[in-house]
Structure formats: C-alpha cells, structure tokens
Image (cartoon, rainbow, N blue to C red; front, side):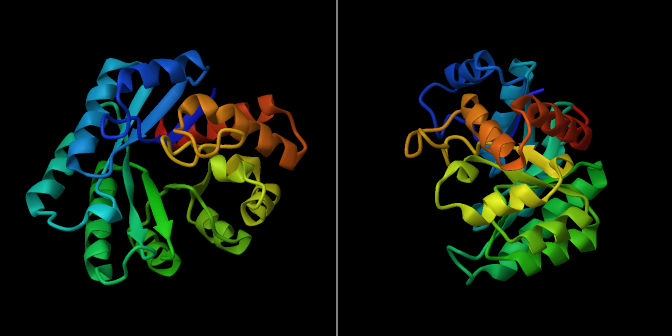
Length: 250
C-alpha cells in the first residue's frame, strides 16, 4: 500500500485542496496523513479526513507556532484528537534552526503534545531541526513512538531513534544529488523502519525540485530508495506501507 505519512494538503498551502487530494488518490496514493501545525490547520485536517476515505489526520502544534498558545488551544488539540480519523499527534517537535530564544516555550508545548499522545495512546510525528538531544530526551521521558519526520541526521542518530521505536521518515530530499548523508542512512537501516512522506507542498523530489509538491510524487522517492537498497519498488511500497499501517493502526 502506497502511503504518504506526512503532508500538508491544506487551504493555507493550495488554491484548491480538494483537487490536490483527488490528484494524489488518482496518482495511486492509497493513504494520506495530513498533518496540522496549529489549531486551525489541525481542525481542517480532521474535516478533510472525514470527507475522504483515503485521508487521515494528525493534529498538533508545531514549534513554529508556539507563540501565543494558550491552555485552551492545547485543550482544543486534545479534544479534536478524539476523532476516529485522527491517527497521530503531529506535526510537533523542536526547531532551533530559526530561533533558540524560545527553547523553553518550544519544549513546554512539545511536552504538552506528548502528554496528549500518551493519554490518547497515539503515535507522534516529530519535527527535529538542530534539537536532537532535547527531542530525544523528551521522547524518552514520555515513552511514545511514531515517526521522525523528514529525517536529516546521521546513521548513529537514526539508530538511537529506532531503538525508541520510531520509524525514519524519508521524503524528497533523498532524491537530491547532494543528499549523501540521508542516502547513506537509507542504505544502512532496515526497510522495516522506513516510512514514506512528501511533506507536500515542500521538498518536491527530483526532477520536479522547486515546484509545489503533491503526494503523487511519492513514486520518485520509492524509486530512489529501491535503487539505494538494491530491491524493487514493489518491495519498498509493500514494506513501508506495512510499517505505517502498523504504527498508525490504519
């Protein structure tokens, strides 16, 4: 089963979200997990998941949206996480690339999201940019599992998150010619711990790099992983699909 475990098919990103979803489904994508990044987008993800059998939602508050978050916002995420089409708490995490000045605030919001995940017994979809130690410690503290979204770290780091029970999210970056580090990671970790993602509308794979992404581009990621591991595209689709279905109970 071809599954996009992480995308943002949302009205803030596209002129016609419904057409984008239909395009992805027509392109052979059988399951799509739309990730929210704040209350508004999380609500929209849930509404879209109700509309399409193929679509599921992840709800959460991401690190770029921590300013001004109230306890009522956190409660709203907890409330909407009860919807039957919500399969994860995400996109959540830490991002010290853009700013380190609000580290404490980012960690506070992350922990509030992890508490919801723990309470609801849901996996998490985690954004990590230049915050590996703090991310690792938070995930270990709350003993949750899920996906490390758009993984860009070392093989050693990948193995540490794998030991915590996480899948390694591989997206369009793996097709880039200069992406040696992530190519090496893909070569050296088992296919049983890889999930596919597009992060649409971002990180469009070669040969469409620079253009707006859609889950229908998953095939290029599949092909690159198959080439790196010396297996067939069918093998990649079958195993990564099984990985995500098991992790998210799809």
